Length: 170
Image: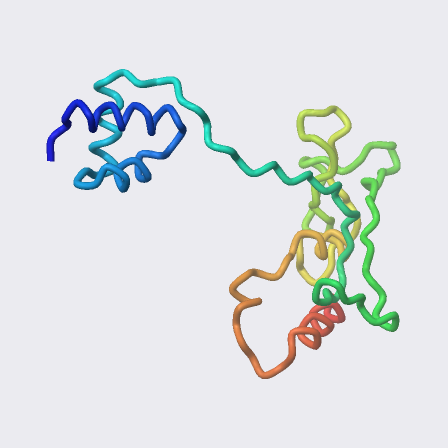
């Protein structure tokens, strides 16, 4: 179907009302969305009413980070299972007053970076690492998060029991 003068006039009217190219193509009939877009560009139609957009949702403030067994939303974890709160740990200072750097780390020290690497006070944790891991127990809880694939896997034991066993192993 061609572009007659009355169809072009209807196209201009619908475009100015803010209808999308798909909606205009449906109303005109016999043309595709891409044909409408092409004709709009050839006609040089630019200004149009913008369709209403939903209001943006307000951003919630971040909650403090806690690790522990998670409960479904709206339910509180049982009071007998304490949540594990990991404190912000300062790097260990050596006898000379300096913190662990990449040059002073050895295999039995926690290698968790603390601070911004571009700052002069950047250091590594330096506490004793555990069980051949590169981190101390507190930083291992932060660094090793369960993978999504492991969460999706179905096994014989309930999710809550699996989480508790993992926390007990740390």
